[in-house]
Each structure stands twice: as C-alpha cells, then as structure tokens.
Image (tube, rainbow, N blue to C red; front, side):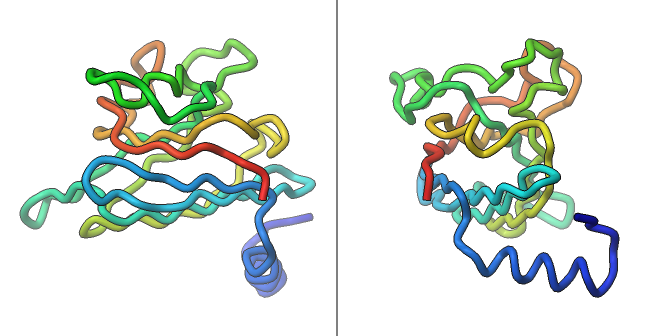
Length: 164
C-alpha cells in the first residue's frame, strides 16, 4: 500500500478515516481539555488521528503553543497531587531505545486557539501492542534531545488506549 501523494492516496485516506478505528483513547485533562486519539492498523503501520479541544492558549501573534505528545507504558490516568497522571509511567519503549526513538515518541501537537488536530503514520508499534497503555499531552514541546524523555514538562491530559 502506497501513501504517495495523489488521487489514490486521497481516496484511501478518506475511506480509511470513515471506518471505525481499531483503538481509541478519550483524552481528558486540566481545565476543559477534551479530545480523542484514534488508531487505525494498516499493513504499513498505524495511522493515528488526534483531535483535542481546550488546550492552554498562548498570547499574541507569536504565542502559539506546542505540546509534547507521547504514548506512555502505564495503563491508568491516575496519580497524585504532584503528578495527576503519575500512573501513566514513562514513555512506551519496548526496544530500550534512546529518546526520541522510543516507540511512544510521537509528533508534537500544535495548538490553534486551544484546538489541535493531527494525522500521521508510524511503524514504531502495532495497535495490539499499545492496548491498555496511555496517551499523554505535556504542557511544553518535546525537545527531541534530553534523556530520558524530552523535557516536555508536566502532564496536562491523559487517555487510556482501548480497543474499539
């Protein structure tokens, strides 16, 4: 299956996004953060669609916010007063890779007046491998350098990945 730009890939993408995902995570977080991550297993990898509302907004023309976004190994969106999502654990990293090559390292979310939408393809995991894990939104962008997890700041939202 090829995702080269063109008519065939546009038709494939529309058809794929009109079917039920293989897994979903309902994302909930600070203040009014609400969203969903949907996972579609393909022969060439996992297509992921993310839509989130209620993200913190920046100020001014250059105030666009960027948020770290990862799959974490833990299976609960719970924690403690210091870290409300501590039970989400660390980045999903079954290969013991250095950051940013963890299987759970994902592209950042770019806020747009409190809203973010993203669709991307990854071959770092299969849907069946991430069931029961969590997706986490961090308050700052991942720097894709710092070890062990990119210095993306506090966790502001979480969702448990479940089969659909």
